[in-house]
Amino acid sequence: MNNIDKIYDEFNKIRPDIEISIEQMKSDLNDRFDKIVLYGAGSAGIAFLKYLNCIDIYPAFFADGKPEKWGEKCQGIEIISPEDIISRAGENTLVIVTINTDGKRYCKSFEEALRTGGHTGVHKRLRDAGCKNVVDYTYFRRCHALFHGDPYNLPSCSDIEIMLKNKDNVAMVYDWLEDDLSRETYEKIVKFRLVDDSIEVPTLSQENQYFEPGLYESDENACFVDCGAFNGISMQTFLKINSNRFEHYYGFEPDKFNFENLQKFIAGLPEDIKKRTEIFNCAAYDKCGTDMLYSLNGPGSFMADIGNESVETITIDNALRGRKATYIKMNIEGSELKALKGAEQTIKAFKPRLAIAGYHKTWDLWEVPMLIKSFRPDYKFNLRSYMNHLSFVYYCE
Image (tube, rainbow, N blue to C red; front, side, top):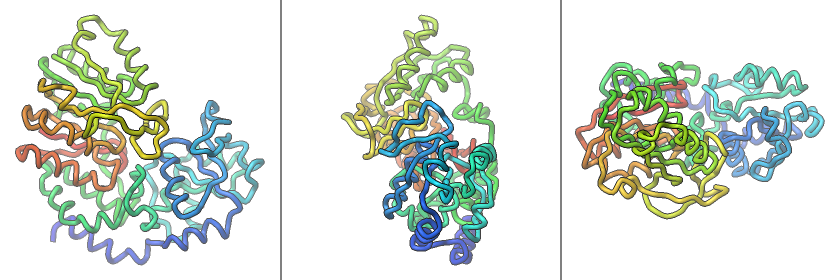
């Protein structure tokens, strides 16, 4: 029996002890608290709100630590300050912290979850504001049925049924991994999702994310395709590592706010670098056209049916028009599979090195490497994590 089989067997044994039903979860919420407030009006908060709405639970407010958000609305719900929660919602309010977290552990009871502090600074601020009932959203990952289908990006809350149905694929990708650190990281991610959310996944410095020493090499002839270019942060690292020597840079960023900051960053670069730079205010995708983006005017903007603005989409194959790519990086909030499909011809023709996020959707863990392997069976895979189970990257060469 291999290590993946052992994890699945352990899950089957403990599932009755850790799983709660939707009915039990609704009872915990509706019968005990007058109102619910979600702390964190970002991508995790929006996703968790949507999951709650699917079972007819409707939080009264968002709260957020950023003053510039107070008085605004998120998904039609007013955003208030933490200090206003009690006066606006009452003392018998449950505050669910909906910011991405490394998680804690499966709790045997709701009482235990309420006692377990996750984000120390956030919990302290909420307690100081008079909030007596505070819990991290990761507690609710025990309610497996709530997350069936994984329609919204919430990496801490996997679709367990899809994990179970794809056991053979999970095991197959494990066998493809090249080194011990990759295999250990992968095992612990699977174990985190299924049996033990207190487990520590080997985590490296985010400073080297996408450009991990030993897995990325500087190249004066580099043609870098940067999907999720954001404000130029990846380009900045790329230029530093390559000492400004490269052939071409292609940046893709659909969020208009982020794209404007990317333009400002590039405007400040030397002319000889700007001449080798091409940027697209588009989402890297599997088709050319338009689709919906949920813009957060910062990190975390994501493509989704619930998006708040229409953006252009483009395939990497169409954008490059047969030109060379030596390195493709993708961290695009759940659109990685679509963007990879739109880069099929480029990948087949040039076999660029790849750095692809594999964590936004439950199935990305196995489908990202499987899709890449279908394009070029000669790819080799390494896996590195940069935020426990929450942010990991497949490096392919």
